Amino acid sequence: MCFISPKYFRYISKPAVKTRAFQEACVYSVVEELVEHLSQWSCSVAFFELSFIPSLRLRSFYKSAKAERFRKEMKQLNSQVEANSEFVNKKRASINFQPNESAAASFLEDDKKTGESPLSQYAVIIRQRAKQRNKSLVESDVILGEESAVSGKNAPSSEEEEDRNEKGAAAFSSSWL
Image (cartoon, rainbow, N blue to C red):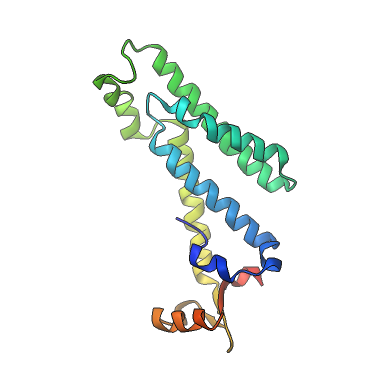
């Protein structure tokens, strides 16, 4: 669900990197990927330990970020991670096995299947938001090159795209322009 393909990073100019749209795309991509990763472990007996460093980094980011929209996004993600940690820790307090025992594999299995953990529920919301964003991006997709802009469904084939990339063309969403 990466919002910006890594193959285009080498084509992005420094002024484009400073644009609001590019920065938002990067932050939203990080949020989406981090939510996906952490939601895979959201019902693990070791979730608290697994999420400790990402939680510290998120807290550090939202305290140091100058843009309110980024602070808000990271703070919301961090609060979901912390809520999930509390959820797992409450369930973990009632167990009598060690995390390295085979019984730990079935820990919160029912909750995992039903998606009851706070982070799993948040992941559903993030996926929907990403799907809407990607849909609007595809609808307004523009490839800039030497010639005139080509939009959406009339975009060149992969061979044509490689030729354009070799010539130094770059792909951006029309909302960036």
